[in-house]
Length: 458
Image (tube, rainbow, N blue to C red; front, side, top):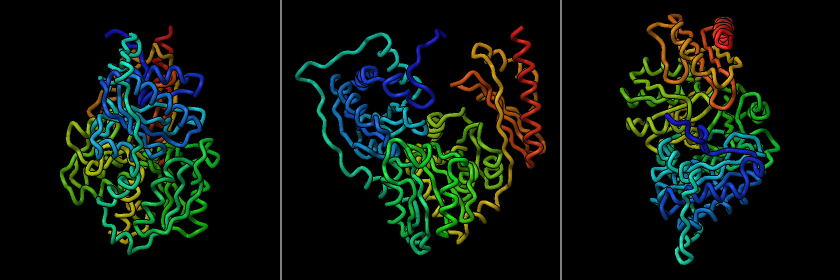
């Protein structure tokens, strides 16, 4: 296969503003996107980054120059914009966001008419138009129009409420602390929760594209303030969103912060109790916990490569109703087959209301795994050969080669080794029933990888 020039990464186009992502480049990318959509009607919106309004104007210039008509939403969570595509039956959307990246970054996500990001094949079409200079501009009297599209966040909030028992949640009068990282999560989640009858306390909820409160990636080490606030105000729950509010990480009433696969497994359990036999779509990087729950409650696990777009497309292909990732992405098909932080929050509250349980108790009942991570340096040109060599050395019945290599062992421990798509390294994720075993797996397989890489170097 010829080595194709790339614009898109695993999740849209990203770069440092005015360095990798300049106004000129943005206009050219958007003109290529406009040609791909062939004078279509497109929604445009952005997250809270300081460069959002500037890049939105550049995107609109490129799209209208090629004859596309724009419905401009302005600032909104990514899942709200994706929902608007379906509701207003547009040909797609262009969302200006760099999701969880630091404030100096921005990016472009392109959405198809079903509200899901473009497939790899569709991305390649845009890349070909861009790199081969095949952009056709519209005649002066065929330039696209620009109209404002109001009400998008209202529609989105109303849609989420249809999928949970609002009366049951309201009766409980939950107190929730919300940390939207000074970004667009603050435009929807606090309002949704108040409309569900919750008392809401917010931190980092003023919109500020420099992200002064915390970095927009909701990693446990950045969420100390949220944890402390939940305990200080005696709340039932805390939730943190990423920069474009499509992911949610939860904190229980005791201030304990959970990785996404723990809360996803809870959603999965209650979903399967009501929908036995359904397929659950999740990347190979997810915890064995997700597999345990599927086996216990009659679900079928479908493993995918790592990446939210892959999960969405696999759900679409199989008509699956639930997907999830360890980073806090929950894909609830009856609402939309994309990551949605506010929808995930409503589902957790729905479970707490139904079971009359505290989050610590509900999560405490789940099987417990200890997770460790590691990395081994590996030159990009040796990644493929390393993987081939590794495959030969680790044969066995419980091995997946969907994305890197994942081995499940008899004692419920597992290790995943996969080449990074962005750095010259191999990433290792191990889990086991105790921390020592997880660390031992990281150590053992890091040594094995180093050995292979060194052999290949000489």
